[in-house]
Amino acid sequence: MIQIIDTVAPIFIITLIGFLFGRSKFDLHVATLSTVVIMVGLPSLIFSSLTSMDMSLERLGEVFLAAVSCMVIAAIFSLGVVKAFGFSVRTFLPSLIFPNSGNMGLPLAFLAFGDIGLRLAIAYFVVIALLQHTVGMTIASGKYDLGSLLRQPLIYSVIGVLIVIGFDFTVPNFIVSTTEILGGLMIPSMLILLGNSLASLKISDAGPAIVVAIARLVIGCAAAFGTIWFLGLSGTLAGVVFLLSTMPTAVVTYVYAERFRPDPEKIAGAVVMSTLLTFALLPGLIHIAKAISLH
Image: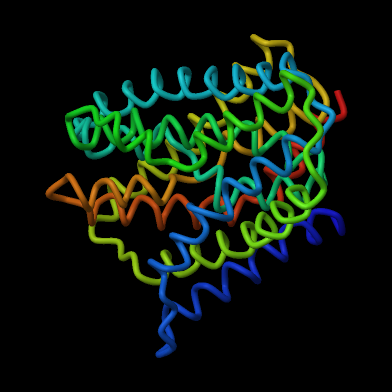
């Protein structure tokens, strides 16, 4: 119980700091912080973590496959929920499929499983992020934009990781140190941004928001257990897959809803309710993830 509290408390506290900033008169320039996180912090964290870990291309491929498997299973169940409740596919489907494996998932994986958990979570998150900015945006907008994918810095950091691991290059120490320092800003920044987002989002229609919140959690559990069973995962990777798959609705789904859909307030409510539900159940989710990792 003490271990779970030690894991959950920092998430609550740092997210609360972001929330209080969002409700205060202090001007937290979210656009600037988000840009720094996406353009500098995230690529640095991906590169420094994955190149410093003794991970083969086969192991990396296993993590990538697990993430894809979770998303395929989640997409199938999510489409069923959308059809069953008569929701708009373009509005609600991304919010059911995509978990917040970045803002919440990465810090939780680090606090629950240490550096190994963080590195596995980063490899998992790369796939989720790529799918969010391609498939997720395509569903919301109704059109495919290859340029948006090519503008994502994480693409090039992943390419760099594959080159280093594939050719067994030795990364110069100054690059290792620089990317480690820059990557260090990611976890607190992402939680602060999450809290700030929660402070500005409002629930306009509680019915769909509650349905999406519960369905996202159930779908995440189903996708995780299905993937762990199908791929025969075990140890820390199995625990990380469960933890990241069960995260709440990704905030980025609201960003795309606001950009492309006429009813973004419905997704805002879903993000808030889903996040609150996950926070309430976080001790239990961490306990299950740790139990899974021991098998």
